[in-house]
Length: 86
Image 1: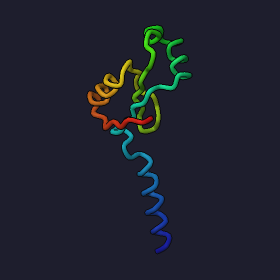
Image 2: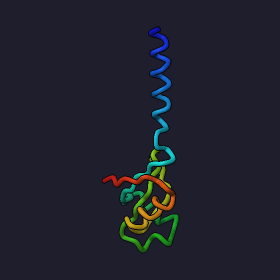
Image 3: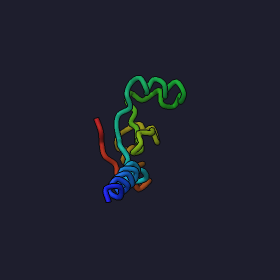
């Protein structure tokens, strides 16, 4: 019986790793060092003082935006539940 409990716990832990993966997004200002790398790659971004990112639940950058409102709009269009991080 103890073995069954361990299997259930392992199953629950593996399922929790994917909770919110396609539903949750984080919105945050992109750090200056990353902004410099991005503007070197994408010339159109060089004119903006601050850039905002929408990140997946896994922490992957989904899109770069020029304002927080653009980031929120993108998250809404993609039907993501967004939260702001700092």
